[in-house]
Structures are given as C-alpha cells and as structure tokens.
Amino acid sequence: MAESHAGAVGWTVRGDRAGRAAVMPGAGLRGTGPEVDAAKTRRPCTRPVPGSVNESGPVLRGIDGDKVSRDPAHGQIRQFSQTELAYDETKRLLDDPRADRFTTVTDAVGMPPADTPVSTAERWQGKALNWTVLAGSTFTHLMTWVLGVAGALGLLRLLSLTVFARAHVRRLTRPRPGAPWLREVDAPVTVLVPAYNEEAGIESTVRSPLASTHPYLEVVVIDDGSTDRTADLATWIDDLRVRVIRQPNSGKAAGLNTGLAHASHDIVVMVDADTVFEPDALHRLVQPLAHPAVGAVSGNTKVGNRRGLLGRWQHLEYVFGFNLDRRMFEVLECMPTVPGAIGAFRRDALMGVGGVSEDTLAEDTDLTMALWRAGYRVVYEESAVAWTEVPTTLRQWWRQHYRWCYGTLQAMWKHRRAVVEVGAAGRFARRGLSYLAVFQVVLPLLAPVVDLYALYGALFADPVQATGVWLAFLGVQLVCAGYALRLDGERLWALWSMPLQLFVYRQLMYLVVIQSVVALVLGTRLKWHRMQRSGTAATQQLRRPAPERQLSSR
Image 1: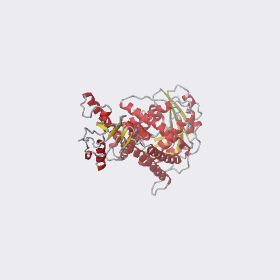
Image 2: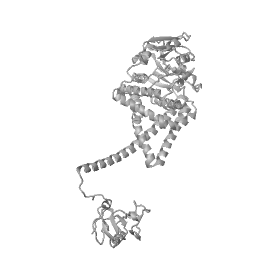
Image 3: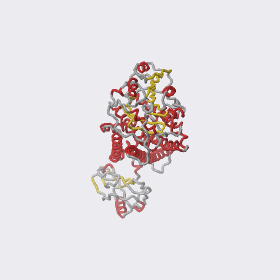
Image 4: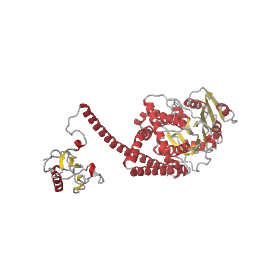
C-alpha cells in the first residue's frame, strides 16, 4: 500500500526507449503495490484526462500547474482529488506492466528525501529563508496599509484646502450681518529692507514702495556688511523718505532688529531685498491692522521669474502650496508663517515678543509663532501682491528649501509647548503645528518608500490598477491647482507642468525634508546660505493688477 504525505498525488511519467516508464509520485508517494489509497488525496482535480500511449510509453495529460503543451518525453504531473476517478486512474497506472518503479519527485531530480537530516548550517539557512519570506510578507501588508493611509491623507488635505479656500473667499466677498466696518488705515508705515550683497535688485525693491499709493511711509535699508554696491545704490536714490543704515555682517534677524530700533512709525512692513511691490500692495497689506487683535498680516507672494521648468514648478508651489495653505490657515486661525518677502506688523507687538529672534534659520516662522503665543491674531491679505525672485538652479533651490525646512523644524520644536496652552495660542499650536507635523514632516518622510512600493505594484502587480489610481490622484490635484490659480487670477496654462512636478519636484522636496530631519536629529548647525540674485523679479514680473476687491473688515 502506498501512502500520500502531502495531501495530493502527483506523478511525473518519463518514457524510455524500451517502452517502460518510471513514474514518480510528485507529492511524496512511497513504495509499490497494486493500488493507491486515493482517499488521502485532498487537492481537487482540475483537468482529469485519461492517459494515452505514444512511442515513448504511457502519458498522463496535464493538470493545474502543468502546461498542456509539455512534451510527454520530458515528464508529466497528475493530481487527483478524493473521487472515484482518482482511485481508478491510480489503480490503472499501478497495474501498468510497463511501469516498474515508483519514487518521489525529489529523488527523480537528484535531491535528498524530505526526511533526510540536515546540518546545523543548513537548518539555519532554512530558518533564515523562512524569516525572510515572513518579513517580506509583513512588509508588503504594512506598506499596503501605509499606502492607503498616505493616499487618504493626501486626498483629505487637497479637499480640505479647497473647502477652506472657498470659505475664505466667501468670508471676504459676502457681507456678514453684525460684522463691524473698520476704518481705513492711513497711518504712516516704516518699510524695513535688510540686504546683504543685493546690488542686482536693491534699487527696484526700494523704489517699489516709494511708488506706493499709501500716502505716508519711510524706507529703511539695513546694509548687513555687504561687499558690493548695495548700500551705495540705495543711498543714491534721491528721495528723502529713504534711509540707509550700515552695520557689520550679523545676519538677517539682527538687521531687522536694527531696523526696528530706527523705525519712526507704529506699523512696520518687512520686505526682502529681491521683492517688488505692486503699487497698491502696501496700502492693502496694512488694512487688516485696523482690528486691534491683529498683530501681523501676510501678503500674497508671487514668482516673478517663472520662465523655465524650475520657475514654473515654483510658481505652482507658491500658488497651490503657500497661498492656498494661507487661506486655510486664516479660516482655522493658525497661520504659521508671515513670509519675509511681504509682511506687516504692529511695532509694539514686535517689541513685546523681544523683536526678531536669532534662535532659528526661519526667523519669519519663529516670529509668527511668537506673536500667536503672545495673544495676537495673524491673517492673510491676498490682494496685497508682491513679486519675488526664486532660485534658477537646483543648487540654489536646494539651499533655500533646506534652510526653510530646517528653520521651520527648529521653530516647531521651540514652540512645542504651545500645544498645551489655552486660548488663541493653544488653538494655533494644536491646529497649525499638528498640520505641519503630519503633512510637512511625517508624510514626506514616508513618501519615498510609498512611491517605490507603488512603482513596484505598477511594474509587477497590477499595472492597470496602479496607473488608474495615479491618474485619479493627478486629476484631483489638477482640479485643486486650477482652483488655486483661478483664485489668484493666474492663467491655467501652468498646469501642463504639474505631471512632471509630481515625478521630479516632489521627490526633491521629500529629500530636502529627510535631510533636514536627519541634520536636526544629529545636531548639525546649518549656516545661512545666500542665493545669487539677478534682479529679474522686477523685469520679468507679470504686470497684471490684483483683482479689485472691497477691503475686508475681518
């Protein structure tokens, strides 16, 4: 009596020139005898086809796992389930006088039997293989969940940005019963322009607020130890409203504090030395300060030198990323950053938080968070438009975004205790810091692994499904980006570069976040990297006036 140990009976039949056949049970069939205990077989028969005979000997036709086109001379495999057919076929085969030997598949291919003792090294090799397979299976299931969660969070962020941006627009354009109508702000303004080796654009930057529609202002240029003609060019501007202060090189934060000490007015506007204002931007920017609870106002920064693929990608980043985020942040009252390119502040609020801190490389983010913790509100004025110059090479882009990300992480860590505070500070931290932690730190850290797993699925699993999911996600992003461009009065033609942005630009952003987190954990001290300016913000900006909109009362 033969016995099956693997739950199924399978044979490989090889013909020989003498007409005899060697039949090898593929599932552990042992011994010889007139019949086989087919009741012990468990796998169902998928294609039970009677055997036939050719010039090489008996032939058993294929089953699942065995190709129908296999040459019988190279062996066949047969499986039977617990049926009468299995018994009959097995008995007929064993009774075949031309089959004189039955053995296992392992013996037929020259491998030792399954019950052969193995050495310690071989045993550990087997265990290592099993652990590797288990780890691979666990990783696959884990990444499936991570991919699903990351995709859901990404879609949730896009939908949230769109919904809150729409709510922001309604808040500004629709009258609210009982909302007070605040007076127009015509108070004098001090514009601070910190500069270090900015001769390429300093003259355009200083002249733009001088041409503003705001009636009363002064411009204070703080030359931070420049080695070029920055201070001279600013001094040669023939306008009594311009003052130039020279100091040894001390950094941007120190320069702003020097400017604060020389400011003559209660409203202070900070502007980068590569930024150019629209004529009405300054007046629109200071209007929200009519509300006594507002301590700072963020303007609408646009990319002036958007020619070239890198410039277009940054244009989309500013409109779809920064500006759409700011609309949501204002609705949720958790604005984390007033950009250094264009921002208005109460001077007494700045002095109350100790001025501009030098603790982080993102002094604008650090200052904004400090104002929230001091009890002030921070809002966004989208109609105050300024044009800024962005990096034109990947090296400059990497340095700028690395500094931004590293400084933001520093500011988040510095103000982490605000999460447990009460009032406006606590609301800001629990909403704003949580958003930054999830969508600008955690997800970018996981994104490269998720993208690689998605690429693996597209290549080796189900490419149609993977491609469909990616196209659906791209479609949602295109719709949201188109809405952001429409809100900012921009043309939709920039959307053509978004698919390429997802493949290249987004991966670079992830690498910047990873490098910043690693540098912060290791305690690496990052120095300020200055970007090489060309002064193109003024010459290449799109001179389209901001859409006319009634000043909001907020």
